[in-house]
Image (spheres, rainbow, N blue to C red):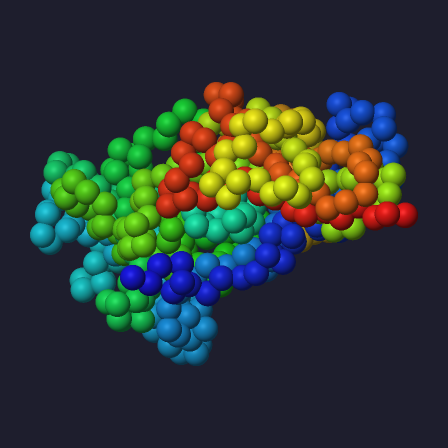
Length: 418
């Protein structure tokens, strides 16, 4: 069977690197870096080039459709309901497993929920939150942004739901071709009520302060804060309330777990492939902060020969050393790449100071840095991992790839003879 990710058009690793390098510094040099680390100009330069938010045009892209919906000619784009003026959302009962609703929003009787109605609702019910978008089968996050929209529950309540509702199905535009339909689902309880500290499931119309583009799933897409990207369907067109008890996610293909929460993992950013003899090794990277939070990032350097056993994936015996988790940015909007970001109105930020109430922020990223001491000439493998707030080391507690890639990342560094 062809894996679902093979059907997608996926960008290369350069987009992950763009997450880490973004012009002038917006990240603090932390006080808990050692004096040696702070004095090292190479490490300082790496940290000063970090940028937290990803400009919308630099997000990695996972998409499907032939043709891609946002590449339709202007007239067809409007006809498809993929412009602000033409977008309408159906919110209906499942014909096979009916939900009891007071009303439905349908194209057939011209009651489908319009973009203008969404903007009216936004005047009282808008929400903004930071989320890292990532695919459960890819190595690294696609980008981190401030997403803005209206909680899905506020639209669902307008249908006067009454009973026999166990799940919510939803899908995006699919060129009127059932084979191209990409759909996902959530329990109704998750949509109507948010677990502590978690933003709502949201109908998103802005990314980093600007209207969300067609490439990013606009004019309106769904964003589920705590999950992988396949739950956050682009080009949203239909919401179905159903009494069916199980998921209908397209992403079940390829043996994927469709109910997996975001995992905590570490990835490398900037590491020099070659290092002169007697020179410290500066490294930066990012940690994806999953449901269990982030306590530590650690690195382990070892000679590449002899190689570690191929069947070894957890490396619990390694001489792991703590890296430094960098503090929140001082400027969340460096270079104007992310649009206006009034952080006092972002979910999880203090309404007075504009600082995050806790750090790192769940379901986002944190940067990390370290300076490894000089090592003798030779070829070395460096690995990185996280320790979550339950003191569990990556790739545990969920090492299974189909519920989110949590493999331990590694890079090779050659230390020169002279």
